[in-house]
Image (cartoon, rainbow, N blue to C red; front, side, top):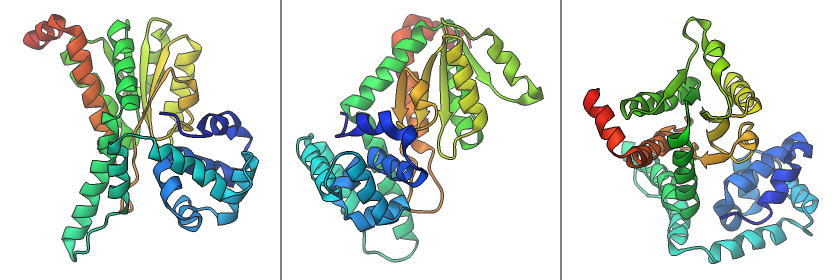
Length: 275
């Protein structure tokens, strides 16, 4: 489900000043929090001055931030019950001491992130991505740093299922050579989250320029690969601690692999037996 003014933000995003871009990403990536939290708390979490949120609201045609917030709140009230449950998870915090609270908060955050894959929009994106992959001549898998294991999982298990996966890595400096054959019959799965890796972004742009279909596994509809993609699979990465999590990205790939196996049917079984 598209949240209010999200399409307007996406269309205008590149013209926003730097801090307003940060605030705009907050609106697009955290619609629940926009509806529930105070402007001051949202500004703190987005790491922008409260005045930036006010200026953004006015730039979008609202009298002030409260009017924009009301629009998000109304949208949330119209969503399924499961969404209200996630809002409760957002506000709930355990009053316990010691290591248990750290672990509990981590698991709670992961549960909230993973529950999003059961929503209709996420299911539709995963299914559409699997449809592209099963018809592709080649499936290129790209990821760097913490995103590399996610891309590797897609390549490794996909190859076990008999899918024509190609991992784009930089061993021996041959990454660019592997991309020379990319074309209109191919699909590229690019994995990158903030801070985005330049190579992944450039490789994705190059593949699209050659006619390939891009699936972006990323943390925002405003990430630098999202605008070039046929399909965006959004994953949350923020955690209570100082690290970000790649667990949702792994789960997204595992869902893709399940869908891919189901679509390949007996071919997948034969490939597994051969392996």
